[in-house]
Image 1: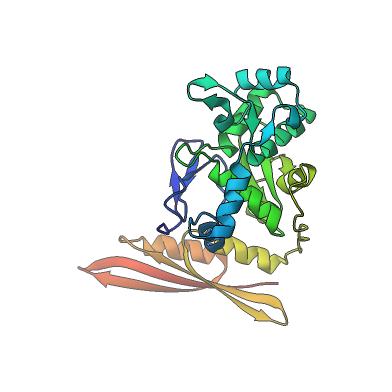
Image 2: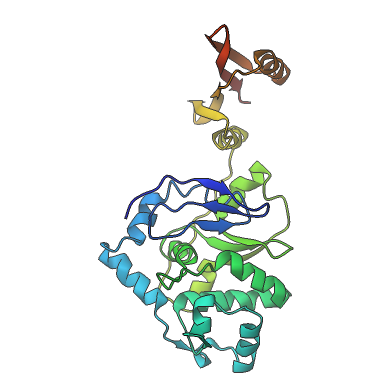
Length: 301
């Protein structure tokens, strides 16, 4: 199992792909660009969870994916389940036995999805939109006969303080994100739309899958901390440093590199307009400017 460097890949106009830290898990397809920004921070947990050598997680994965819930134990009538099967609402892995439709039994992961569907129906989502949500969050991996990404978010919700939710936009596009991700992205202005949140931690509690770790309360961020997060997530920045005094961020320093014969006059103009203290270093070669390095410092109030 070889670790990969996380990478965001643009696919169609409405979707992105994120590489997995392990070879056995396929890329994550996502319609919402902000999600998985912290996957590198969680990569050790991710790799341990999907490692065949880790006996504890291996047993947990088998338990979560074992189909032991009958249709009757779901609490949903056979008529409704049959209708959901026709509308492609049921999880893909539970739909077929060979070439035949067969939804007689469900795994714990699939039960979490069925409970989420019930919540979505309570909030008035149409079956068409719910089917669209399923294609985004319940990505079936045929080789492992599992939903690795959804399973990972479920297990993180159950055994850590992070509270992951299915995030649903008005048009039915959806993603799974933690409360922390959502709060940070409010400041990044990438999630300034109304969304419906279905808590995975709450669903796991409803189906009584053992005791879970209580969610951790979020702390408010100062304006300096918000600015630091924004700078850290700006792709042009190669270095970000913060000066801290008395527990508060007083100054943020950033470094950007401009390769391929940049227009230094244009860079200088932008820096003058920003009002930040800046230092510009030009790299010369072959009779012209071959690159530039800009160091900026901004005081925080």
